[in-house]
Image 1 (cartoon, rainbow, N blue to C red):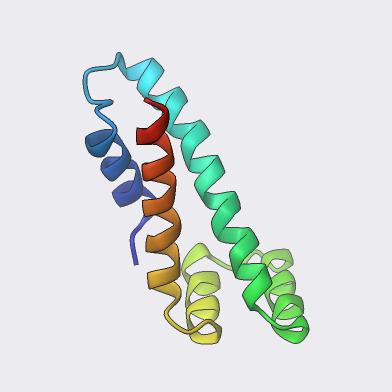
Image 2: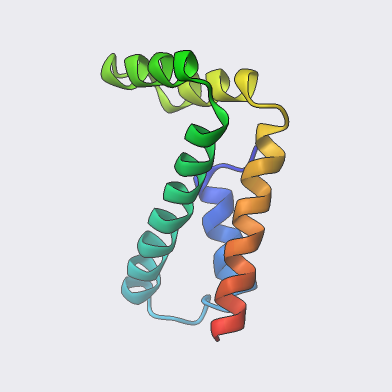
Length: 99
């Protein structure tokens, strides 16, 4: 599973953002990560059944760690890591197409 840091590094490298000033790079990365994480969340919720969505919600309300939440969804969604990678790759392709 790619971590947020790995995803950010991939975006910087593949989208040619390395030469941007740090403040602009950070602002752009924040916006891009927000979009990617929302897409992951939406697809995750679509794949979980009602009981698992409630368990997910309960975990978030109980302040479960990101690692605990990720472990839970990875157990419930077949090839969760592949799903996340596919979302990230699609996002990178969209960004490259707009460049």
